[in-house]
Image (cartoon, rainbow, N blue to C red):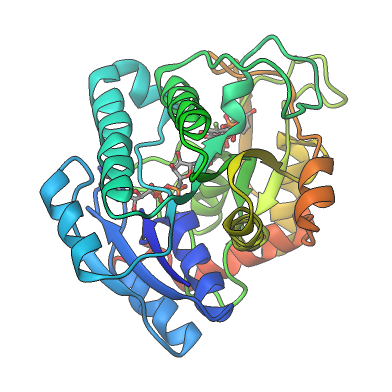
Amino acid sequence: MRILVTGGTGYIGSHTVLSLLESGHEVVVVDNLVNSSEESLRRVGELAGRTAAFHELDLVDESALESVFDQHSIDAVIHFAGLKAVGESVQEPLSYYYNNIVGTLNLLRAMDKHGVRSIVFSSSATVYGEHNPIPYVEKMEIGANNPYGRTKEQIEDILTDLGAADERWHIALLRYFNPVGAHPSGKIGEDPQGIPNNLVPFIAQVAVGRREKLMVFGGDYDTPDGTCLRDYIHVVDLAQGHVAALDYVSARPGVHRWNLGSGKGTSVLEMLHAFEQAVGRPLPYEITGRRSGDLPAFWADASSALADLSWSTTKSVEQMCEDHWRWQKNNPFGYRQS
Ligand code: NAD
Ligand code: UFG
């Protein structure tokens, strides 16, 4: 198939483009590079031995998007493009709603107009909100507690309504847990701009000397070691989950929802210690106050993806840290030179 990947130069997008190329698909990427670099796609091309077409454009520009559908005969779309920082979304809700919702509406309208009605959407475990018991199961009521998460929930609603209104649509809503790691080649990986919000990119920058120490947000949670538990998933497993979901939905109309996670919780300190093992030395850290909005623990019930897609995670926390570290060590400033 020829797959349009929005946000395909980003962290999860670039790994998924590689998996798609390796699975024999043709790929067209659109991205406005607001949080990524085209260098990622050049390296994906090196790894795959063939390249994806690239168009630099913003999804809020409907006519630019239309012209991509005019130029390429697209069979299906994987939609990653969006802003994703929870804290920033609380400060700048209008930017988040405009970018994520308008961008998605433009995409869906262009798809409909061109008769392309298969889409895999990047949702997030954050849609489960703060009131559900763990592990999270797809059939639970959702209710995000921050603007970023609400954009994910609202896009899920839009896609669900669309699937209900028109049975020609094939829709996958993928709720990711905590993606970490990098391709084992060390050539592509996560390249956050500024101070990383997420745990593993922060630890990696401490290990490479860009940050002094890790601040562990809260050591007094009701968890085995007092720090929060999350369900970390290797980005290569996540990328393969997209290929599996695409294969499944291409053959079946309707709206399908899957958690993509490992089904296990790992604490902040366990993750730090696994990273120390990968680096081969202890890393400085300090336990500080809780971060507002953090939940003590959540992980996926990953059984639906296994049953429907024959997909499950294959890589351990140790492999996530080894691969993340190889990427960071070889590329201390990410895709930039300094
Ligand atoms: P990323 O920032 O690396 O990738 C997103 C890409 O979208 C970037 O390359 C950015 O330049 C592009 N983009 C943003 N707005 C755009 C627009 N209006 N037009 C065109 N391009 C635009 O993030 P990622 O970690 O690869 O996440 C990919 C998707 O997965 C996002 O939708 C994110 O919300 C979702 N997600 C990520 C996580 C995570 O922890 N990384 C967890 C759950 C869900
Ligand atoms: N943490 C620290 N120090 C740091 C960064 C994080 O102690 O410098 C802790 C957090 O308090 C939390 C854990 O590490 O307990 C994981 O935090 P992340 O920021 O890496 O991940 P979150 O679970 O908060 O959120 C991430 C994404 C969300 C997404 C969610 C579920 O940022 O967008 O996973 O998929 F919705």
